[in-house]
Amino acid sequence: MSHQHASAEPGRRPQADTEKIAEEREHAETLRGRLGLSRRRLFAATTGIAAAAALPFTGALAGAAHAASPGGGRGDVLVPPGKRGIILYTVRDAISRDPLSTSVPSGFRRVLEALADMGYRQVEFAGYRQHANAEGGADLETVEGARLLRGWLDDNGLRAEGNHGFIPGSWPLTAADLDRFKRTLEIANILGLGHVGTGNDPTNSAYKADWDVAAEKWNTLGAIATEAGLKLYTHNHDAAYAFLLDSGPLDAQGRPTRSSGVRRLEYFFGISDPAVVHFEMDIFWAHVAQFRHRTYTAPDGSAQNDVFDPLATVLAREKRFPLFHAKDGTSNPAVTNGYDMVPFGTGDIDYHGFFAALRAKGFHNPMYEQDNAPGSDPAQSLRHSELSYRNMAALRR
Image (cartoon, rainbow, N blue to C red; front, top):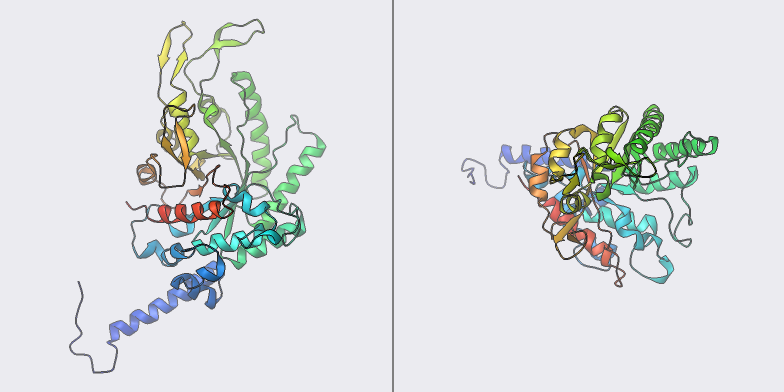
């Protein structure tokens, strides 16, 4: 509803309008400082005028105007502007591409600029390598490289929340692995990461004894990371939600052949230290688990059914899931995984219901991911990222 200000003098703004303009200017300055933007970049981000100059595809800043005001002007957004993120594996083709070969953004610096212009405010690294011709050279997994990356993040109002990086393979830890892990933590702190982790499960084994060993190792690594001011996390695929083999009869190697019905990661939840071991649910792969891992053989030899519930798994221990991979899929029962990977917001996974049900509002960090975003079109992964940002920003309660 609009209101008329009949008593205002001609040519003068009503006092309420003047106060509103002042408040908006103050908010803009606060936003500029928080995002690390110059006044010019803030203006560009909130009006969308920089798109043509920034990227060789249209609409690159359409999401940025939405992100520039809290909640896009509404208080019912499911993913707050500052929490909209992307794992850089999605655009790995752009990062690894020779910038001398194309006008499409390539290498870390230009890709980070492009993602920030779309509206993203968080990124998750998938390693620190790029094309040798990109600014800074091929390998940025050094103190100097991390400082360079941090500067580019800050310049674009981006925060790095995690990395799929090095986790020691040895246990007990070798001196070399421990030293490298500590260097990983040092680089993470230079980058300002809140979390450090891996793209793999704690173990690929189906057996309880191996998960016991994995918990001992991850509790130790988690304590080291916590001491460095970081949260250690493991990213999980569908196999982690398969059923644990923990019951007899035993096979020829003395290993159990049946299950009590406990899923592998559910068992790990109980034996890992909640203070130092955290998780990143890949919501796509969790739905693949729902499709694939439905039956197990009980200790008495009977076949039992149990359908996995990704949301219930998170809600039972919500603060142990600081990160999500927001990866979408279209249902396709004809394929092994039951889903075909697609840009976020274009598939059948109920992200509205998932995010709306979370109780710890503003705690989680959803990272858009699409393994198959790169294609023959050199701009495809960036276009999919732009579309996915818009769809994430559009989610409302």
